[in-house]
Image (cartoon, rainbow, N blue to C red; front, side, top):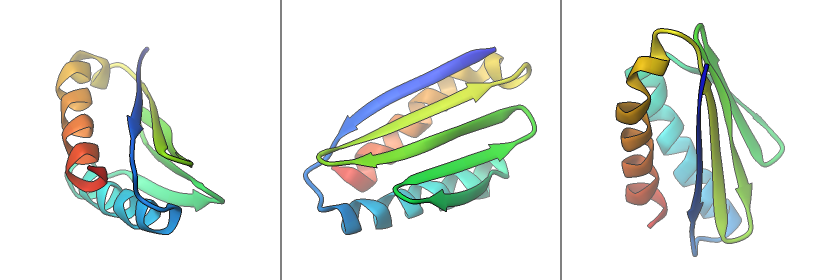
Length: 91
């Protein structure tokens, strides 16, 4: 198993950051078939071979994903896509 851990800074207020994370989640859902659900300030996501969360915190967002075997081979590509999506939505 492989892990992706990203801490992304943001100056957005929590409600705007939540909206931005919703946009990131929609993109990940469309591209990778993830099922997403909010639990407080944490968005949990999963699909066979992938599970993780996006945690909203003051001035930062924590992205964490555990990749099972075939996704672990795509770790670098997935991490790059997530970093790009976070930068586009959260500044």
